[in-house]
Length: 251
Length: 251
DNA sequence: TATAAATGATGACGTAACGTAAAGGTCAAC
DNA sequence: GTTGACCTTTACGTTACGTCATCATTTATA
Image (cartoon, each protein chain N blue to C red):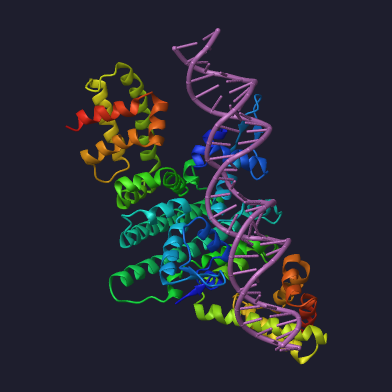
């Protein structure tokens, strides 16, 4: 089947402007242009648009969608599996929200009290979304979709206590790092303690821990300018220091 | 409890910029400013923010949220009930999407075929969203939340056939209207037939039909400049004509 | 067959909901 | 007494389109 821009738009529930925009940013170009310059979309484009809309539904920025689709190691079936897990996570989030609203109604009716913390249960999704926006591409490139999705699911399921614990660990690591970088000895007791803390910390986000993945992560801290910037903020050169210490720790 | 801007932001999972922006547009202002000009939020603001985030989660534009909250007949419990029904609708949409993805996986693996129509099942949400954006405020003002939400739920549940039927009716009405307005007789057979068709048409969207609501709707067509523009597009003065014909029809 | 209406194209400007950076005030802590 | 953590306002940038305006082409109708 071939479709004109409006036909495809109607089929998929998007405007023709949207399709023109997608063409403009090279996200989805028509199969060909007819002699009069009209955009003609074919079967392949229909399927691709479906994929794109899946990702868009998940609030992924178009730029990231583009990267994903363009990457050579893009596997459609894998992508669909990732969709599924994300959709399931989203449904769970909504269940949390439903629960929250029901609680709120009960609280407004009866005398049941809700803590301010509780009132924002279910909005934590935002953290995951932000994560996706900021680091999505690189992490997914390095670790694959399943791990990232699993991590996000884990965050979503975290209780306030667990979340607080992770934050506390993170602060502790950073404080120690500042001192350790000064001393500049990756073999020192402090450096190795930091590695242990860091292991604890990432275990808050990962489902299964492996030395290889952990070492790979600290390497990513050095290579990715945004992670690097974060650690340089903590202490100049702490990304490199952490990686060197981790090399020793992971032996 | 009192919170500074960052404390509240952390609690609710939004940025301080967001809170400042909400203050700027008078959506959520702090309880008071401390002597040094810092924004201080109190209990009432915490609760209101929770409400706002609920609506935002449903992709409602902030401007509409503002209108809702500001309207005198804003009833918190009622609003929460409306949240619930919307969340449930959203969960159903996600179920449709999950179904869709599973089908797509099956189609890519086995020989099962999927029609292009089917490929975009679940994205229909967009229609509802757009509706909300364009007409949300006025209709909600006139008809209350339950009716609007119920209507949206009904649209979400429509099969492609049903949807096509509604579209067909709409086109038919418009064609007849063009002729009838020319003749300019609201009592004519044609005019009354149009009313019957229009009843059929809105019954596609409404759960329970009433003459009063129907008459009210055609009155809204005359009063609201956007509906009016739509009907003037069909035929100059057709909004008024339709209302006049409906007055007779509803007797 | 002429002409109106629908559909397409390409700019170009507008918008919502913030992000982000610049420039500067305030306050606890070392 | 100055450093660093928060706060302020001002202002420009961004994403994903919506919405004209203007022009070409295609299709339906008089």
